[in-house]
Every structure is written in structure tokens, then in C-alpha cells.
Image 1: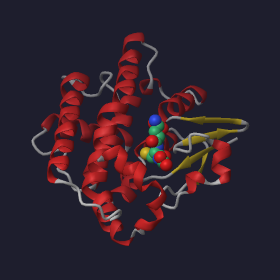
Image 2: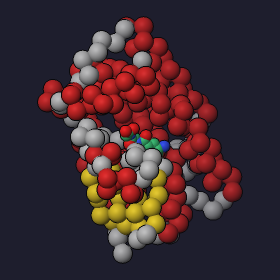
Image 3: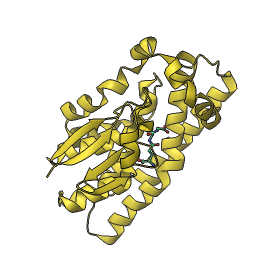
Length: 241
Ligand SMILES: N[C@@H](CCC(=O)N[C@@H](CS)C(=O)NCC(=O)O)C(=O)O
């Protein structure tokens, strides 16, 4: 039976889940939840996830939230190739270490730049002070430094010689600030080379297909109706400003 994946591809963790499912030929059906239209607050989605965030998974009577948990569930249930989450204790621990770190670092900082540079001024029509923007770019830069210096070091991928869940979760976060026009890879040859390896391991076609929406954001904001975000506006500003 196919698992149901509740996704909005503007969301980084949703992209990692979809890439993983497609790359590994996991039988799945996508249920689109448009965050811009507030569909996460609907009655049906409330039965899938009380947290009301995407991604979420339904497998028969079983429901699951949180992308690392979903990725690990899919990897174990469908016995995906070992390199995604190797049996070796220390390689596995390296992946767990990255997955634990990234929420409050690369994920938070990349999202913040995306919202401050694009969504808040262009869709919510709130001016972002220059110092706030600069501080957010600086925080993101610190996280990217750690990705390069601590997590990658001189290895081709985070856990060693092959792509793992850690690289997948990392690349989708790195692409978020790229989507608002920030030159994330400039002056970072190590990050550039890693991105190329990750893209090649995923497959360029799949990578581009899943990132198509988010990479069109600078154009799409022009048509977005900010009033749809009115009920979440205070929460968003509180989180990022
Ligand atoms: N820790 C969660 C984060 C999920 C999350 O923050 N999802 C966002 C989109 S990236 C969401 O659904 N936001 C909707 C909302 O907060 O209303 C994961 O890794 O899956």
C-alpha cells in the first residue's frame, strides 16, 4: 500500500521527503497542503497532524510528523540502500548529529533570510530594517561555515564517501536562501563542490523538479495574496523579526 505524504514543496523538509521517496521508488501518494492557503489548519489535516505542520505521513492507521522521523521510517520500512543511513555506529551517529544540529542552525537561519529578504517585504508588505537583514545573513554565514568546517571537513559527504540523509536534509535548507536571490555559494568552493556531488547523487532532473517551485519564488511573490497570511502574520513577524 502506498504511503500518503502531505507536502508543500515551498517547505524544505517536504522537499527532502519527496526526493527520498522518489529516488528510492517508495510507493507514495502526494497530498498537497498549501501553506499559503492555510490548508494546514483544515479539519482533515488536523486529523493527520495536531502539530499542523508539513511534512506529515500516513501509512494505513499510522500517522507521523517531523521530517527526520519520516525519513528514518521510510528508510527502515522500505530498506533503502544502506548509504542513506548506514549500519556503522559512528557513521550513523554523524548523521544523527547533523539532523539534531540543523533545526536551530542552518534551517532556522536559511528560513530567516528567505522570509526577511523576500516574503516579509514583498508579500506581507512590512519593511525589514537593514541591520536585521545583515544580522540574519551573518547568522546564515556562520551556519554555512559550520556545515563546511565541522560537518563536511574534507569528506565528500557529511557521513563519508556517499550521500546520506544528512546531505539530503542539508541541501534543501541551503537552497531556501538561494531561492530569495542570496549568493550562498559565492566564495565557498567546498560548498559548491559538495552541492554538485549531492545533486549528482540525487539526479539533476529530480533535484530540479522538486526545487522548481521554490526557485521560482522571486517571480511568484508578485502574484501572492498577502491577505491570505493575515492570520499568521503576527506569528511570522515574531519568529523572524
Ligand atoms: N521540524 C519539522 C518542521 C516542520 C515545519 O516547520 N514545517 C513548516 C513548513 S517548512 C510548516 O508546516 N509551517 C506551517 C505553519 O507553521 O503554520 C520537520 O522537520 O518536519
